[in-house]
Length: 487
Image 1 (cartoon, rainbow, N blue to C red):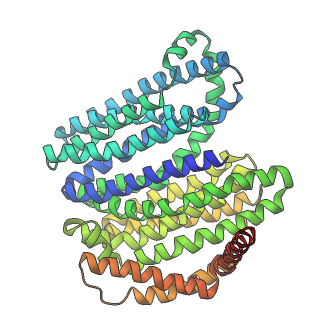
Image 2 (cartoon, rainbow, N blue to C red):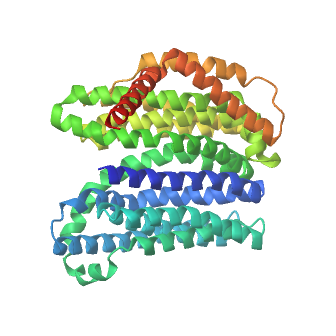
Image 3 (cartoon, rainbow, N blue to C red):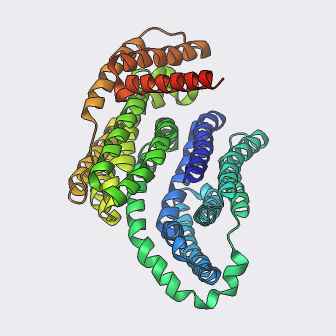
């Protein structure tokens, strides 16, 4: 268990850091219009990957463990491989039709479509290969493959842009190459699968029966999280889509680096407590987890809300800073709400094994997000996408709490929430001070803000931090006393 947790923590760190750096670096290296095109292609590719291939990826992770011998795993691999080929043919056909339709409005975007398809297919195959490696518990291969995919893609993009400045095609090509290299490291058993292809049909039906409902939920999540970029690109242009993607990417990836490891460490124990001891011990762990998610996530959100201009100017640069600063507070709040939706309240459906019912919470919120953006973007501009993001995630949270409580009541640490909010008040006041618009001023703002919040959190005992530190100090003291006596 500890090896598995360490594996996923390391892989999450690599992919999270690389993902955040990609936003910071590419938003500076690409002109606003070209960065918007790059982001738009990635969003479409991600949506198509979720719709066309997530049924295979989720099934690999879930059903691989049920194969008890090599022959069973070989037949399962054959079904996965055939499923990938069939999905690739279908998705490629739809994508090609989309390229031809797009030429009616923008004849010079054909190569973007071609390279985007390569990103889609290579990324999908890498995801399935990584899922197989993860299910087979080849921990080092999994970490190495995911690290290579994340870091090599960024390095190739930077190198390509040094060769062809301002061209999003080279950045996208770098992602496709990195995905293929990662898939090679993960080593899906293609040769073994080809030997067993005649017996794939029963397994393929089993994979589809399990994966199709999961795909519906995953697609709902993706539409809720990403469709606004496409609507902005269609309504306001690629530059506006790039600015919104940068604002959303900074907020979501910053929170994504800090908060998922908390859930990663606690959630397996929650499931174990529920299966062995019942609902109440599991709820106690979830209550504790929600307190830590608030204690770490809320001050980061306050930082984005109170100092968006300084953050955008230093992190993104002059060209996109104004538009990013306008929408950054809203995307930060939306990202914080998304964390609680996916990492905390969605656990009600996972514990009860009713994950397909999560679609009842996500689908109405996604529909509302699309409708709100269509109505508000032409009138209010990019900030309307931020409003829609917050409102749609609020709807999803309320529906998830309502529907989820029918299966399993998920607790929430209201006392820790109030204490954390009180501890963030001095932080918000500190961020209003006039800091120099330089790198040193940026460091001073972040470092001083961290110290202010840490002092307030300790004084208010946020998430029982004072009690934990006292207990930790006593443990060290006892260990030191025992070592002294032994000497």
